[in-house]
Each structure stands twice: as structure tokens, then as C-alpha cells.
Amino acid sequence: MALPDLLAALEREAEARTAEELQRAEAEAEQLRQTAAGESLAQVRERLAEHARALRASSEETLAAARRKAEARVLEARRALLERVFESAAGHQAEVRGWASYRPALERETARLLALTDGEEVTLLCASEDRPAVAGAAGAGARVEASPEVKAGVRLRGAGGRLEVDRTIAARLASSRAALAIRLVGQLERPR
Image (cartoon, rainbow, N blue to C red; front, top):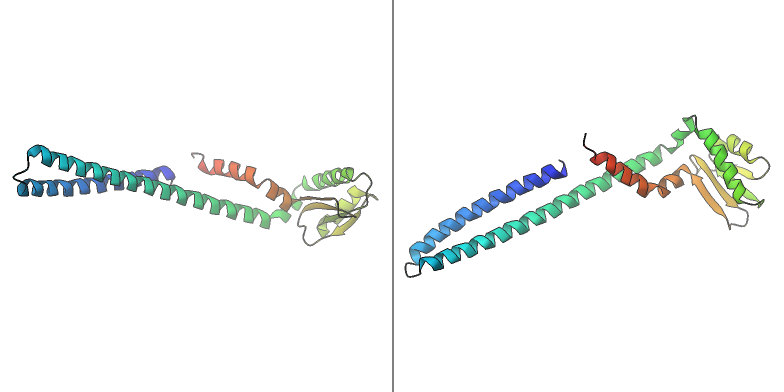
């Protein structure tokens, strides 16, 4: 149920409760009228008005609490959906290898990483399927090793451990998570 529909349903429920409470208040007022023969009509009306104000305040508090609860449920559902989307994306990261643009991009990324090293001895870690492409792009400038941790993309590690650059699909997805989440939520909330 969309947030506007949920809020409308909550408002209708709050209005129904308010009407019920007002009916009870009117019944109590009638009883008060009968039992308070000595009280003036103005005093009875004031007591009735006070009771109605208290009921309205109570129903407004109930409605506000219901709105907060509904909004919290929507936010939790959105968070859970985004978590499933990112878990699914992480599970499918190796599929980018089938894209026509993947190998050229991997070779460009390898060349960019090696340009950062200024001739330092480095190791490039990649998936075993990507080893030929990474080795071809690296030439004699780096040692290339297959790593079971890398599903797609490349990771550079300096010999002294001072330099490590992770350009794997998993790392890129993690670093882009906030921006991607904003775009996904925008897509989800767009009217259809």
C-alpha cells in the first residue's frame, strides 16, 4: 500500500474513532444534564466542550503516532528492498564479463592503475577468466595473479603494502551505494 493511501486510511480510521468518542461524549453529556439539574446549562456546555477538546487532542495524537508508525514501516520496507537489490547485484557481478564493453574497460582500468605506481613493483589481482586481458594490458609492468576473491574487475597491490587500489566491481558497487540508492528510490517512487 502506497504511503498516501496508508495515510488516508489512517486518517479515516482516526475520524471514525473521533466520531465514536464524540457520540460517547454526547451520551455522557446527556447523562450529566440529567444528573446535574442544579448546574447551569453554561457549566454543562463547558464540561462538554472540554471533553470534546480532550477527545480531539487524543485523536490527533493517535493519528500522528499512526503516521509516524506508517512512515517508519515504509522506510524499513524501502531499506529492505534496497538491501535485496544490492545483494542481488553483488551476486551477479561476474555477469559483466559478458558485456562487450567489459574487456576494453578492464584494460583501460589496468592501464590507469599502473600509471599510479610510478614504476613501483606491483601485483594485479583479478578473476582467473580476466587474467589474459589484465596481463595483456599490464605488459611487463606488473605481476598478474588470479584471485578467487575478485569476481570481476582488478585490484592493485604494491609490493611494500603501501599502495592498494581496489577497482573490482564489488568495490565500485560499494563506493557508489549511496548514490545508487538515491536513484533507485527515485525510480521506485516515480508515478507510473
